[in-house]
Length: 185
Image 1: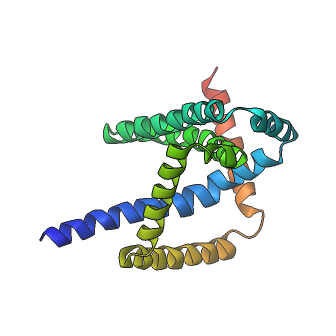
Image 2: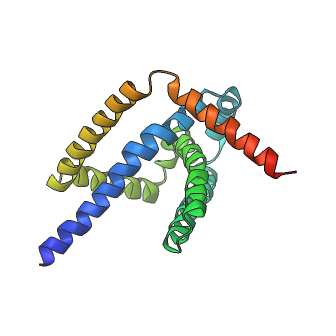
C-alpha cells in the first residue's frame, strides 16, 4: 500500500514536471526567452550584468525568482479556491517573468556558480532532476506524453494548416471586440 501511494505521488510529481517542461517551457517560455535574448536592449543589459558583483547578481536573480514562485503559489491558491480565470491569468503573468529569470541566470551563470553554496544547491538540484529522469515512472510518462504530443501535432497539421490558427484567433478577437463595443454603449 505504501509503495503504491509513493508511486502515485511520484507519478504526479513527474507528470507535473513533464507538463511544465513540455507544454509551458517548450511552447511558451522558451519562445519568450529566445525573443528576450534577441532584443538589442537586453544585449546591452548583458554587459551591465557581466559587470555586477556575484552577490549583487544573485540578489537580483533571487528577487525575480521569488516573484515568479509567488505568482505560482498565488495561481495555485486561486485554482484551489475555484477561481480558474484568476489562476490562469496569474500563471500566464508568471511565464514572461520566469523567462526573464532564466535569461538572467544564463547570462550570469558563471558568476552565480562562483558562489559556493549556490553552486552546491544548483548541482544538488540538477542531480535530483537527472535522477528523476532515470526513473521508470518518468520514462513511462515521458513516452506517453511524447506520443500524445506527436498526435496533437498531427491533428494540428491536418485541421489547422499553416497560418490557419492565427487566422482563427484573429477572427475570434475581432468578434469579441465587436461584442464589447456593442455592450459598451
